Image 1 (cartoon, one colour):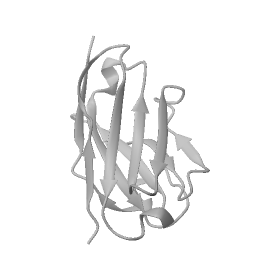
Image 2 (cartoon, one colour; image 1 turned 45 degrees about the vertical axis):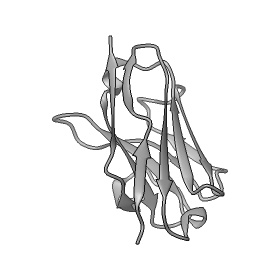
Image 3 (cartoon, one colour; image 1 turned 90 degrees about the vertical axis):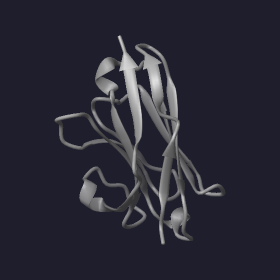
Length: 124
């Protein structure tokens, strides 16, 4: 059974940085894409970033482009999201998701397993 466990969230000041991690169980981690999404209260789930199985292809949401970096370590079954220049509007629950295949997707339907999320709160 696949499980995704996020960590690294917390309280940060505007302009600061956070690094989120997601550890995945299961044998197929290195063969699938991974993604990060976020959801703020009262808002729909929003695409943040995705990375292909090899790490060779990444895509970012417009709201975080230039401020976030997604990476992965297939030897540790872990995907990371480095967030810099944080803004109060980055406040949300951040979810890690496992892709259905090796290629990246920006749509949540491209993912079959989700973590429970980690809260990120950015104060102004």
